[in-house]
Image 1: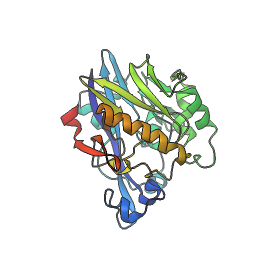
Image 2: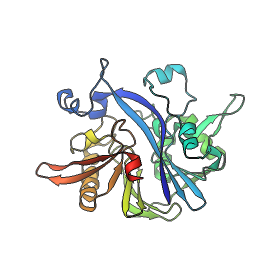
Image 3: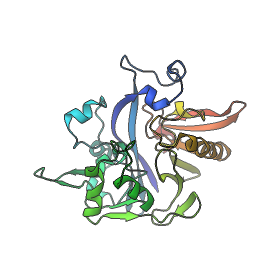
Image 4: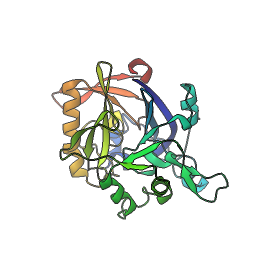
Length: 285
């Protein structure tokens, strides 16, 4: 097995929205904001090469939305999925599986693209199986008012219409092994219904793709919960369980949204679980 970081693009989000009730004087120490109160955000995906399979975890925003839409997110940098895949000798047509932690636009927008004449949409990975879970899919296609702006039908429905959509069977517990994709999944409901957090055994390590359970290294303290979470009081015990396990077992936490810290470890302290070490992807993967 080999793992590759796939940088799909960088953007910015409101720091207050990213840290909820935490005051700016505190969160800005780890995530400094610009003059518009925006902080740097990455969309760092992960590619797993396992035998004859190439599994891509999340796909970023994509590029099919309008200029007005992208204007809200202050895109910066020159990263793209195609450039990142090419860096390792791959093409999007080589991808066999696209695993979506959840279906918010900044995690799955790159899964779907315009067709050749821009009259409709099609899967951006034509040879891939697309993976979600049934509970989350139903949540996404019938969105509540709070998440409606994050669940965009053009990002989601073409996966099903093409026949490429598959559902992972969720175990009765909140953690289960996914035989189809050969890694463990921790299911969490605080951010959105049945977000999936992959745990990948890699050499002698466990690499955890944190998605929106832990957006940045600055979000480690338990009360630091995003304003985007639908059930913030549920996020805290889910994050506590996750971080305690990560500290106990020295998990390597792959941060999808932290533009400046790629992989971290955590440890137990008198103040609770806190940051231990920061690594680049090249050092760990």
